[in-house]
Length: 181
Length: 214
Image (cartoon, rainbow over all chains, first blue to last red; front, side, top):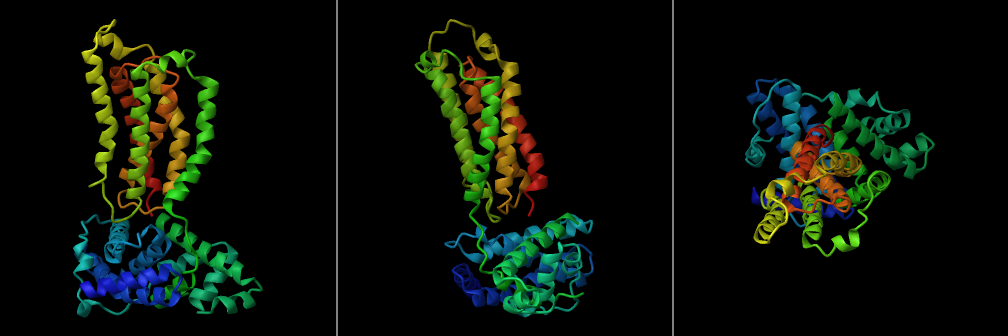
């Protein structure tokens, strides 16, 4: 467990210093843990666990947009679990239940318990439609059609810089919309 | 339309190059933008008291600034600490006791000196109503700025973070007001400033619980 968390901290440090591949690996590595905890939270609240993927995506967006609040000299896991706990509580509250989520729910997830994605998430994709046209087109191209930034720039006749800006703004507005719903 | 989690992760990784400014920077910018509004309110409606040069020789006049600035600075430090999701008041909350300690020491000091006026007269003062109006009103623009800056963070308890933002803005507004007010007794400060600051703290908690969620 300790080793796993040290590895996360190392990956996040590389990510912050500009290594996108390390960032990708980190997000891949934490996702099964977040998913297991989300399922556990849903189950305890008497909610169908197949909604866990919406919560996982919600947590990942928050991790992404708030990563500047992580202190690079601190371990990554407590920060991650604090974000995740906050989002999980929010999600359960939105579904009409108010339950206590223990931070240990995250820390104690064992590797074997980590499950693969089963049901797909719909909330994030559904909010795409309500974004301003440019942000929607860029996100659609990158997130749904899996195009690269370069290909998206060519396809939409935008500069790569403009694609990057629209991508970040799109992610920010998606998160805001999820929060308001 | 579908976006599975792997696609989302790939998308986030493509946005890795984006660097957000630290919360402290955002808070500072927002406070600098908000301050002129409160300063304008202060100089058009109140202004510095005319006898300020003589007042400065009175340690109890100076103490007001020590108390209000200590509150503002402590609240800024606590606000920035709380903008991290894993942070709590533990280990940092005591900073907010510094202004209270200064004020208590001031009250003790005043009690030991011979006074012309009785305790209740000093406590009630002449400006309690202006104090309770001016401090909250001048706080509001600063509070708005502080909340905008702190939205950059990720506080685990938005209401608590909002309350501290309220203290921060009330501390700064009270610093302005202290230079106008002719009531210098620490008893006056402990009563009317505290009520005003508590009011702004409550407004901050309410606004924070809505605005500081992430």
